[in-house]
Length: 126
Image 1 (tube, rainbow, N blue to C red):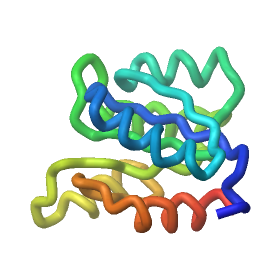
Image 2: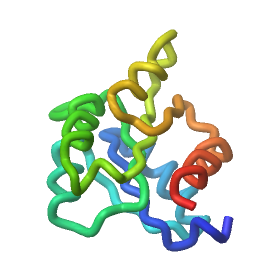
Image 3: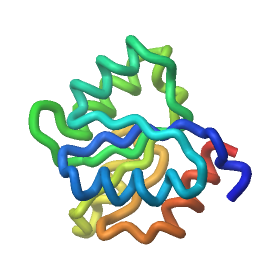
Image 4: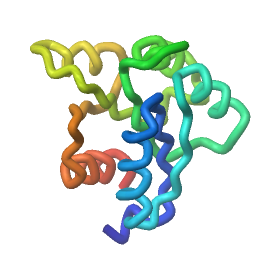
C-alpha cells in the first residue's frame, strides 16, 4: 500500500516473536519501525525521539502494561494525538470496549490478521 510508505510505526510488545512478525510484514510495505519492550520504554522514547505516526500497543506486558501506557498517553498533550491500536491475545467479551474506553483508537486480537491490521493502520494514518 503506497500510502503507508515511510510512515513510522512504534511497536510496543515484550514478545520478540510478535515484534519480529510485525516488523517483517510492515517493512515489506516500506514502513519505518521502532520497537519498545514495554510501556515505560515506549513513553520514555516518545518524549526523547520524534513521534511515530501510529502505535501498536500490546496490552499485557511487564513493567508497564498497555492500560497504564494508555492512561499516560491520554493525559499528555504532546502524545494524545498519536493513534494507538491495542493489540491483545485476550479476546474475552468486553475486552475491545475496555481497550477503547482506556484510550485506544482501535483494537486487534492475536493472532494478528495482517491485512486487517494494515486496513486499521491506513484508517488512522492516511
